[in-house]
Amino acid sequence: MIEELRFVRYPAKKLDAFHRFLGGAVGLQSADGSDDIARFRSDERSYSVECDATGATSKPVVGLSVRYQTDLDDITGKLTACGLEPARLSAEVCAGKLYRDAVAFEDFAGNRFEIVVRHENKSQRFFPARDAGIKAISSVDLRSPDPERDMAIWTEVFGARVRDFAGESGQLGFDERHHRIAYYPSQRSGLLSVNFEVGDLNDIMRSKYLLASQQVRILDGPGRDPASGEVFLYFQGPEDLIVSYGTGMKTVEPDWTARQFRNARDSFCMWNSDGLIPERWGADWETQDNRKVGTR
Image (tube, rainbow, N blue to C red; front, side):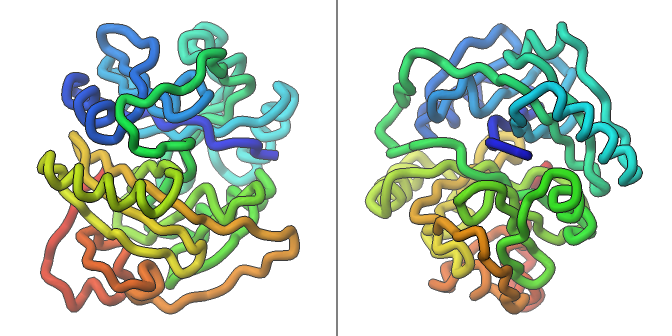
C-alpha cells in the first residue's frame, strides 16, 4: 500500500542553523519556504526535509505516500482497529504542505506519521548546494521502547515486510529496497536519523573528510550494515537532528526471508567502526563509555 517515503518534518528553533547544515554541510537544495518554514530538496520531490519554526510541530513527523484518497479511508479504519487514533488533516493544512490529502497518526511509542496522497514533485531538477552525490531521501531510523509492537502496525495495516532483525531492532521494507524504516529499542521514542542515498563509496569518504574539516561531529562510520549491505556515515546536525549518507543498499526478491542477527555492535556495523549512537551498539553499549547522543 505504501508507495514512497516522502519527507521528514522537523521542529526547529533557529532556521539559520538548519540552512547552514542541511544546505552547506549535507548538500541539500533550499526549496520554497517562508520566514518560519525552511524546506530542502534531495531529489524530484518538492521537499524531503521541512524545518518548522512556527511552533505547530512539536515532534518530528515522517511522511509516506499512498496512491489514492480512498486508501486513506481504509487506513483510518485499520489504525483505529489497532487502538490508535488517526486524524484526517484539513484541506487547508494539506494545501499548505503541498499534498492533496493526508491522515496523521502516532505509533504506540508516540512517533508521528502522515500518510499523504499526491505530494508534489518539482518540474525543475534537483540542484544540490554542494556535490555530495545525493540521489534521494532513502530511509528513516526511529526509536521505540517496543519495536516489535510498532513494526506490527506497518506489517498489518500497510503491508510492509520485516526484512531483518539485529537484536530487538528491525528493518521494514515496502518496495524492492531492503528497508525504508528501521526501529531501534530505546527507553524513549523519537526520530533517530533521516538518511540519504549517495552515489558510491567515494561520496561517503569525500563527505567524511569535508564534514570533519567543517567541525561537523561524525557519530558513526564509515561502516557497513551487514543486513542491508549499505555503507553508511552518520553525523550530527543542529537541535539533535542526525543525518546519514548511505550507498549500496541491497535490493530484495519478493520471497526474502527475514534473518536474525545477534544483539551486538557487529550486527550494526560489520567493519566494527567506532560509533556514538547507543541504539546502534546493542548489548555491546554496556561495555562502552557512557557517551550518549540526544535525539528527538
